[in-house]
Length: 173
Image (tube, rainbow, N blue to C red; front, side, top):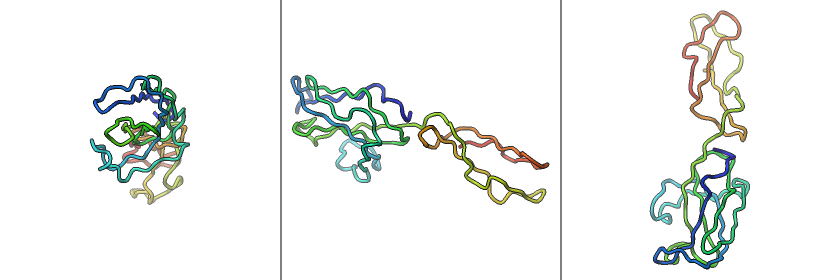
C-alpha cells in the first residue's frame, strides 16, 4: 500500500557463479526504483526497454546498505506512488551474480491507500429537461492521502435538489 514500508523487508544476497552466498563480503548495495517495462521476463536485458529510473524522492528509506557477510537487509523502503515498479539492487565493485549483469530485479506492486478525498471530474451542477439525460455524465475521482487514484470503490450519485432521479446511480471508481 502506498506509504507503507515494504514487507517482508527486501533482502539482497551476494552470490557466486554457482549461486552460493558470498560470505565475508561487505560490498555496498544500492536499491533503485524503476517504472515497469513492458513485461517481466527471465532475461531482463531483453525486456528492459520502456523502464525508466525514477527520481530519488519516489522511494523513501535507506537505499544504500553495506552487506554483512554477503547479505544486506533494506527494512525501511517505501513509496507513496501507486503502480507497478521494478526494484533494482546493484553493487559498484562486485556484481550480485559474477556471471550476469550487476543487478537483481524484483517486481513490485504498490496499491493506493484508503480513499480520503472525493473530487468531481464532471460538471458539478447540471440540469436537464424532464425525461432526458444531463449533458455531462457525472464522474468523480477518489484519492488516497498521497493523491493516488483509488480504484474499485463504490460511489452513489443522488439528486440533491428538484424532482429528478438518477439512473445507474451506484458506480465503481
